[in-house]
Length: 310
Ligand SMILES: [Zn+2]
Image (cartoon, rainbow, N blue to C red; front, side):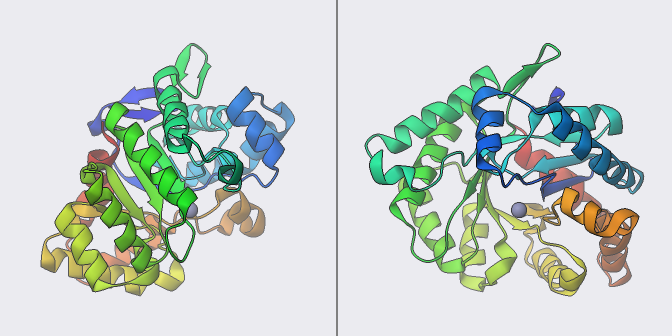
């Protein structure tokens, strides 16, 4: 099943999906903690954000989008109640996450059993749900991690081990922000050592540091590649990667998205926000440049259904 804020849905219901977007990143860490650990919501803040976000979702729906994965982990203030309200009003399937929920310095003091405790928390998030609203147990549909740059740090390694353990226990897909190809190689070493489930591992932002060696290794392992920063300035490079993937036969491992913060974009640009441009501009651009319409349709709908289903 695919776990949304309206409960589980089947693969057929996913259709055209944005795999990595942010509804509203929360900079107030106290509020973010309150949302995740206490399920305490500020109704006035929800109403305000709902007013800004609903038109964005309506534009996306009318452009053909049917599902969106929220890529803001608990520490960035994912708001389950807001997401559910938006989903009900817009008919959009919204896939919430669990994952990165503690500042990394916590590991400096609480290093013992760190990955075991994190894994237990994420398993609990899945088994008990992130919250229960209107009688619906809302389970996370993916596990979002953010790794730093440079060498894989101790805390990031522990976080990965916890995610691998949570995946083995529940099946939850791992959605992992990695900005550098060298880091991706280190992560793949670890995944191999741990005999992790490659089919449920997404290298998000794979386009940020294009490296044929790392991409080829990922493709051989069966890891998913996130072409998830498709914005006007990156149309060409993304299209070229899709063409290359089709040529090499790994287009069935691509997940597309834009990585916008919908709230910020809507506040900055009003109705002219670019949050639906993957549908209104990028897909037509790909088709005009020779990518078969059926192929791009499969990439945008079949691939996400495959990755998020467990
Ligand atoms: Zn993001």
